[in-house]
Amino acid sequence: MTDLLYQPKPEHKFTFGLWTVGNVGRDPFGEPTRPSVSPVDLVKMLGEIGAYGVNFHDNDLVPIDATPAQRSRIVSEFKRALDESGLVVPMATTNLFADPAFKDGAFTSNDPRVRAYALQKTMSAIDLGVELGARFHVFWGGREGVETDAAKDPVEGFKRFREALNFLCAYVTDQGYDLKFALEAKPNEPRSDIYLPTTGAMLGFIETLDHPEMVGVNPEVAHEHMAGLNFLHVVAQAWDAGKLFHIDLNDQNYARYDQDLRFGSQNPKAAFFLIKFLEDVGYDGPRHFDAHAYRTEDLKGVRDFAVGCMRTYLILEEKARRFNEDAEIQALLAEINTDDGSTASFRGEYSSDKAAALKSHAFDRVGLGKRGMGYERLDQLVIELLLGVR
Ligand code: GLT
Ligand code: MN
Ligand code: MN
Image 1 (cartoon, rainbow, N blue to C red):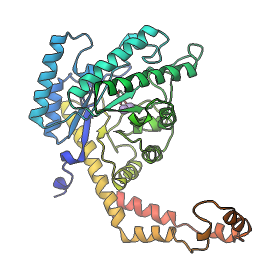
Image 2 (image 1 turned 90 degrees about the vertical axis):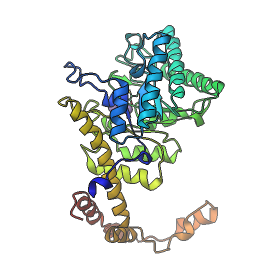
Image 3 (image 1 turned 60 degrees about the horizontal axis):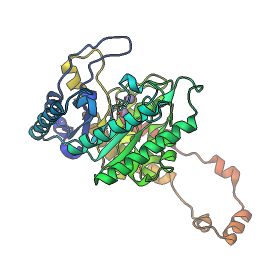
Image 4 (image 1 turned 45 degrees about the vertical axis):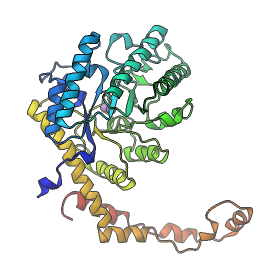
């Protein structure tokens, strides 16, 4: 019964990157612990466990030095695997960080030849993604930053990044593609400092572009936690701005390197409020798990990891439903939000009369401060719901 309840279905829009389930367990101190699996076999596995889609970087699928003939063979084999497994490709991205050419950045490199090469590589990656059905192209600028501020003026960095995005928006329009861009922030790693380090910074930057309507964000749990932020608040701001185009779900301890842990595994309470938010507002984009299995795992462990991400999402989705239907929780919320109507005339649009009336209104300040809010009781009910005794 419970297993049927938590069975992923295509309508849940669960997606994984080839780089996530294909992660071989390499880290800065150690060699791979798992064999590398071909994109075709990864798609097969994702189809078996009920995922909806698969995302990729250009070079997860087509090696950086592939010939045109190799590219077309790889793409047609991949298309066949997608058809057989029923998977779609909602998002693609460009690897602008692995090759040594990008050691000083891609769009923001100090070398104009590297900047031009990054544009060329991105146009090809956009073509590849669109050929496979992608509607979103993510930009994660892992190398767009510095180790030393002696090397680059940050304003120059933003200017270069803006020019690149303006160029690429125009390219997409010129090609007639139905494609949107999603910017993914991260404060550091692999660069000491990455420009536009948070989703909030990206949201501000987007408004300086020629076509802000084509560009949104792809917030990742781990990256905002690295910056010490509340991910729900980050996502809520992006949603409020109409910019939540895509989302990278995973988990992460605060104040650490990018852990990309299984979704909901580290801080289930925060994950609960996130899922409740996404479901309550009706977010209908892909739910992308940008995480990978612990380095201790073999290929069976990778499957357990992927199944776990989706199950946790569905369990939390059910908990969110129960929160919304729980009579005691809802009664507390109603009580917390009571309105005695005494300030109704001050609300809404400004008028000088309203301002004058509000200025002369007598508030019972001491009484306001005495009111208990009942949040301890409310939060305990949430904890009991999550711990399964409610
Ligand atoms: C890289 C990064 C992820 C991004 C990927 C998209 S690249 O794996 O760690 O967070 O989402 O480019
Ligand atoms: Mn990450
Ligand atoms: Mn990510």
